[in-house]
Picture (spheres, rainbow, N blue to C red):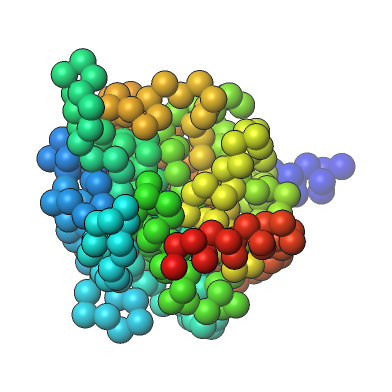
Length: 330
């Protein structure tokens, strides 16, 4: 009995040390700086193709450079540039990508992503016409930046990590769809997408939910890694909204990658979603910070090469829908 008790105490101590170490590297003050900068009026709502999103891209690039990331595929800078005609407008677009090269498994990749665009300037509500997109998705980009710094300092990534800020998600997953055409999906082990993590979910404090939970064992791996931490990951409770295919994870999931989106927001009751009221002041920075820490701990075994999630399989109906959508966009 004493041996079992000592073992349990040792495990608890290791978990506490692990969580404390994560806490020391992911600071609420830094997360708040990222959030308030990206969701400031100066960014003008970060609509793709506008001067506002250019400012956001420059901020993200600066943070990637501070962390010490390298560029993707030998590019001269952190931008992945492409052109796209959307609703008759020819747009010069760019994802922002930073790379942390792996060690023993550097040819295997984990993608950590969020979209940095939002809706821009629109109809004024109570005198506010700037749709800042604090929760959607400055909160996710803040997470990407914090995790880039965390994993760089942690130095445990046997696999290479691509930190990606996708553009034009609000225009139909445009940035992530393009990204998917430029990578070898077979080499991407996991996609960790983060969207709208600034509000307490219906499950209560210290919880998050994951889209497409049943489509791979990605979520179960995260749950296993979070055991004993006091943070719990749940399957997506909003199945009727089909969220698995409505965020940037879908662009990789359609290629078979176990790519899923972490979120905390109560979608069915969120009055700020796609509204001018989606401002930083409506969010809980503590919730964002704790969720980032949980994502760090929960995905570590994928980063260090211990766990490899099962691949995503699409139904025939989903494959046909994908083909029709692709043909329509060409």
